[in-house]
Image (tube, rainbow, N blue to C red):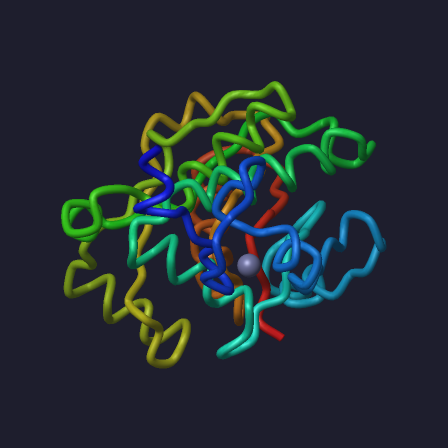
Length: 222
Ligand SMILES: [Zn+2]
């Protein structure tokens, strides 16, 4: 009955959702621009890391363009608490990855963390649902107490500036390194643009333990 007065709307086109549709209508689902490098075998995302950090697999579910359809869903997820979108994208990508040989040897999923101040403001890490659904599909653990985002100290800011001019001052640190020793990690994030965030996380993880790294994101900027 409630739906008559408060119909659930698609987060992309704002049309009313059908009974079997959740957050994304069938039309938008069909129109979302797929990246899916795991399926095509394209090294488009891997190329971003050549010469920066060794990466085993890298894939993204969707392409992201400014003002495009993907942006509407990612914005809903980030700013309008459309938390379920993360779950949907994660389940979607997880379902695909579990059938692919290269992703079968991954041991655990690690989310790119939010700073705890940001976490307080937003109330949740927008990649959590995405990462948990991928972990569920691959039947591996989701580990969110290893990679931590911290406020850079003055000396870290200085070092980061030297290594990468005008970095966004994203500083990650690794704790509980014993949990990841010898493991193949799938690091998940929402949108990849230059790859700087994933690179920064990876360098910290590689320094802390002998790990292999793969990446999966909701979307990649085109
Ligand atoms: Zn729609």
